[in-house]
Length: 101
Image 1 (spheres, rainbow, N blue to C red):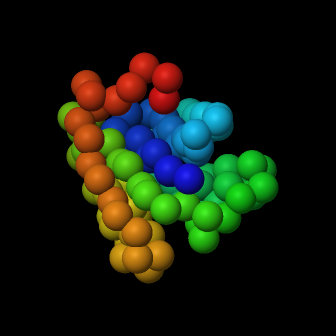
Image 2: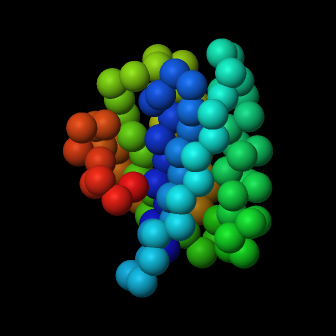
Image 3: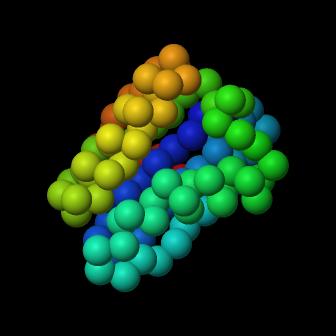
């Protein structure tokens, strides 16, 4: 299962879980300086979808352009999870994100 993280927008965060048969998405509007909620929102999304990080085998994180703080939050979170889970982390620019995510 692939986890997609996009925290580059100034006012929202987006996650997606991608398998061969489905794409499950989550998007949440954030007020200014609410990036600290990102990890908690990811945990709630995974719980709602009935999955855990142990089932993720790759992480793709959006690398910008966009909110500097948002990019730091998303990339740092993805890299930490990749390191802890020993799975690959790939960055992609915002203009290369598939339209179905």
